[in-house]
Image (tube, rainbow, N blue to C red; front, top):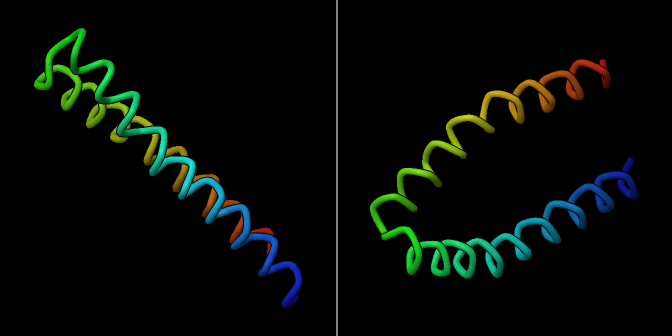
Length: 66
């Protein structure tokens, strides 16, 4: 189980650091085009739309372990 946990954390940190490098660049670029207020609203709506599906996938995977 320890090796599996290490693999999962490796994927987590890869996605985490890729997001830290990518999201500010994309949002900065879009704010130059659309304006900061619109990008902020677009980003918030995107997270609002994605959060339930991500939660459901995590919940389903958690139930698969049992």
